[in-house]
Image (cartoon, rainbow, N blue to C red):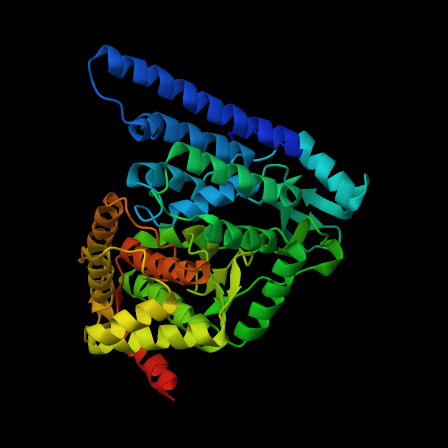
Amino acid sequence: MVTDPDRPGVRVPAGRLSRMARLGGLAGGIAGRAAYGGLKQIAGGKGLDPRDLLLTPANAQRIAGELAKMRGAAMKVGQLLSMDAGEVLPPEIATLLDRLRSDADPMPPRQLREVLNAEWGRDWLQRFRRFDVRPIAAASIGQVHRAVTKDGRDLALKVQYPGVRASIDSDIANIAGLIKWSGAAPKGMDLAPLMADARAQLHEEADYAREGRNLDAFAAMLGDDPAFRVPARHPDLCTPNVLAMDFAPGTPVERRTTAPQDLRDETARRLVDLTLRELFVLGRMQTDPNFANYLVEDGGRIVLLDFGAVRDIPPEVQTAFRRLMHAGLSRDRTAAEAALEETGLIGPGLSTRQRETVLSMFDLAMTPLRTPGAFDFGASDLPRRLRDMGLEMGDERTATHVPPVTALLIQRKVAGMYLLAARLRARVDLATVVERYARESLG
């Protein structure tokens, strides 16, 4: 995600107390707006619905804006909750929180200097021939700067926002309280398992040493594949709060919409194939399908960025998704329902109608994989139909089932590939791509 060069930096609140105060002020402001709205409704002779007063577009916009300023775990939880619009949160809230996936305020230069002084010492600029103070990207955990070292290495430096790692637990507790207090979650839904998994995931993503190992691992796993490039890590400049890697030039994949049809087709095909390889062969998946994580070089090679959201896929989860894929390819509804239960994507907390909706959505999503020849994502309304079904399901506010985060993240990655193929208006022979994975998974 490229930042606006004219966008001013916003200082990241680093201390636990300052972050708690920001969230407390946010809750107080929402309550005040709700009270004022309630008085207006009473004056107008209307009945009161507390949820309607709290979950207004204005309040949702305020939540999204404040989380974007806080960054860190507070922003990441908003991203996590927005990834399944209409399932965890009502669609009007999830839509506004969706901005958190691609919109963060960078640190001001003074705070950046403070961070790098602590990481590299006050003479750190002497190590560089050039250092761009304006970030080339800013996200929830950190921002990225381009620099050239004295020995000529062209680098991308990922710098973590101060206080992010230490604030994860308190941020999540405060956000969970805000969600519960506002009535955003369906009545009876236990968000504790989701929040516990979110906490663990966020600690992993804030661990730059771990991300560096993931970067090395994917470079080794994909090193012989000419279709992909994974930037090399530079350990001499890495610290707990800085991750140094090659700067990788390329065009953001979502800007390739006017590229020749064959390039768009091949780009989508390669990314779909990689997603299946991660799930069924590598057992390790980069679960964030943000379009900004993919660049395309002039020759068509895809640069893979951001390995903070890597998730190990246990063998039992691989097996469950293998069964799900076979059930979908054969249109075996009974087997599909059993496999969806095994993955945790459906459970006893769903109503009969919601279970039927999930089964119908799964069958619809499998259509491109069962279609002989190239499936034209540009001419298909499949992503819109799936979205509409999900939003309709979200309108029934009685669900108490929260799927395991690993299953949600796999679902999110697959959905992201559908959306990317649609954005590229790609034509992909998915049946052929899936065939070898289906054959291999049958043993």
